[in-house]
Amino acid sequence: MKTIVVAQQKGGVGKTTLALNIALYFARNGANVAIADADAQGSLTASADLLEGLRLVSVQEVLNNRAEADLVVIDTSPRNDADLAKVLALADFVLIPVKPGYLDVLALKDTQAILQQAGIKKAGIILNMVQHRNAVTREVQELLQGFSIPLMTTQIFQRVAYTRSTMTNGVFGSDDVKAQAEIENLADEILDNL
Image (cartoon, rainbow, N blue to C red; front, side, top):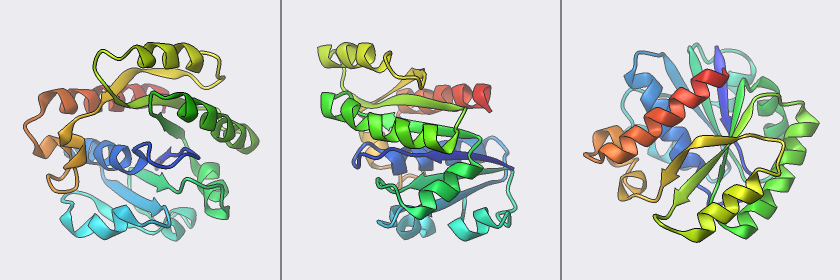
């Protein structure tokens, strides 16, 4: 079983939406995928009935190796709690979403410190909610080069398809081919790191 953890100490960066779409992508491509909601807000848990092709499992099932899946994607809380340390210990890859903004980059320092403390070797920063033709994005990319965690090539743009993800069973239930290509490219990059 492989485990992808979506983590970031800043809230509102799109962790849940990315976790959902990545899990749905792999499930659509034949993997036995489970998703776990380690976020106290419980957005994935609340929307589990709307999702086809995914099994929601508890964090405890994952920790006890009872998830019975090829791949588990775990959405985490934007705070450093006991569950985060336990979940990170299982991670084969940690995906760290960052919005293109200076405060978001500053918040990344806390996440980087937590990952270093946990001994995480495979992680990637993904620019999420990118706005088209925005100079700030280029500046943020330069700032992110200063982190020890690599910046992924794929960028996730701000699109309605992501906002509607729970209603459409992910971006692949929408007609937004650009969003679909972004998730596919991101999944391929993650696979290269697993």
